[in-house]
Image (cartoon, rainbow, N blue to C red):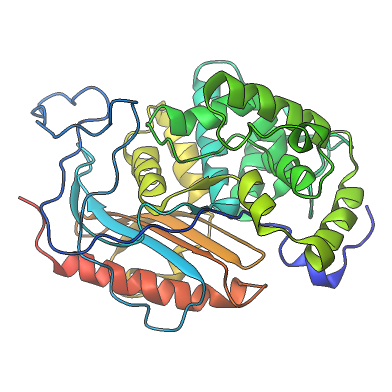
Length: 385
């Protein structure tokens, strides 16, 4: 594959996405809803009596009304979302939280890749995937950006996916477990506004107009269940027909001359700060994995960016951090799970779209200044009784 143009190379590790207009944030100090135990109660732990967490469609209800997050300490442009919470490690109940636009839909960018890891480890535990499997890079599976060596095994690909945000490693693993298995990570939790189903190359092909399937249907955006799975498989089939360098040229042209926010909003994986914060909490505290797979998950997720940017880390108050971020054209995302030395379990999800900057990585310092301010605010508040 030829060298990439300098104008585009910066965003290749990211998964770009447009999104719907954010809804107003709910403010004020209101008692938080208690979450039910997501699975069987541990021995010796009482069953929690909780308000219903899902609506009559089986979807997660909107974020509980919590205090508004403090304003960003430094200017952040565009539309912003934030969910920062302490959760009970046994029940996953929200103990205290702050938020800004927690129910607005935003791009996930490369943050989505942790769901691929979770689906992969479920399949390893079920015997459907062997950790010893090895994979080559082909015309069909190569995505944008750098890519792994031929013959890389599952562990190597999983590490590249999180540490390097490698799109080809992600797509290989995503297709190995199946598009449906990754979407099932969200569906099992009732995250009805979260889409995880398309590999990276698939949405870039759709975005640039190369997918006959995407071009020929108006049903994709609202598709759910079997219809979503059917259309996604067809879009991904279209994507595998094209060389990565050809997709790259088309994408350069798209952003230079033909960018359409309405189309961009339809093609990428997405979520809300609250829904994705719920996923992160479940991922680390109730992943339903074997001990070996849980160690794999924690070790690999510790490679993601976030720990070094937390004030708690520099205060030597952190026992563990698992994190993943992503960036793209005018968008930036960060998520993480934090265990403190004094026993707090924290999640954070930051989302930005429509930034003044096309290259958003310099906004990282500003994003974490806001995340850190929100973490301080949460830890200073009394927990919900």
